[in-house]
Image (cartoon, rainbow, N blue to C red; front, side):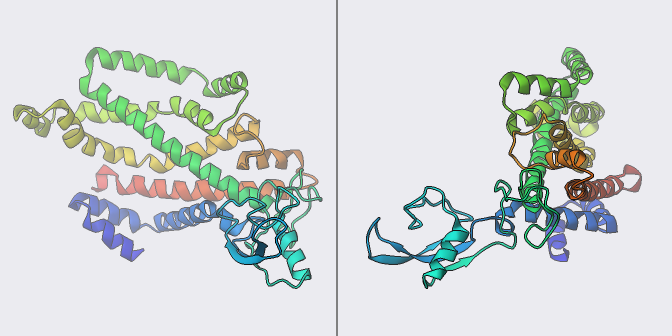
Length: 358
């Protein structure tokens, strides 16, 4: 942490260095960042930790179908896709790697296979449904026999990706509209305010349900865009207020007197100063995106099944809370861990950027 701290400080101005030191000096900020990045790392590398395909495999395969001549080849099935023929399997289109390894070893072949710690992926169905946590299924199985550990790990990745993309698009739209609105003012400001009021009174959940029903598809991108369309308003309003207060400052008037273009004044002089308070909203925006997706999936209007998601596991946990409480405890714990860590970072940022302490 100290190494990255020194690197970051080299690229910051003195006021920003004071804010960064105030932020990273808070214990809750460090705890929140460590938890967030650990969860993010394991979710982004989910294939390494939970997969029914081996990470590495070496076996003798026939040069061609029916040929007795073989060659030793190396495979990475968890990361790369191979056809059954490439794996030297000609009697099926779907390779069961565990059975291939077992068969090879029974025949005395020197086949090497390294499997992930959890040898299940989120889509493979085991014979036992609603199975309690065991050595084979660390967090049990769901109502279709799918491994809860795998679905939780991949579901966290979907939630993290959704939250980060939600933050990115919300800020892009909010910053663009808020900058134009606050800098130009007048009729543009008036009309944009009326548009924002319209977005605020329309219940976005009803729109998500309607559009998903009409399209008969629950794509993550469609869901993301709908949620973003109704979530940029607060970012835009805060940036508008900052622009209204900054556009008449002496440094802006001086830039105009020197012949600076509107674009240069906005992006060079006003926006860097206006973005500082907006950055404190970043963690809360990410956590809002994660919570939005969980709620939509819980209600059945989020992602298409069988996409792994925390909301879908929460829904199953509610339905089977008596017979399979682990279905509720696992996603609840994961969701709480993510949201708490992100909010710890957000509270620390808010305190570090408090103008009373600058």
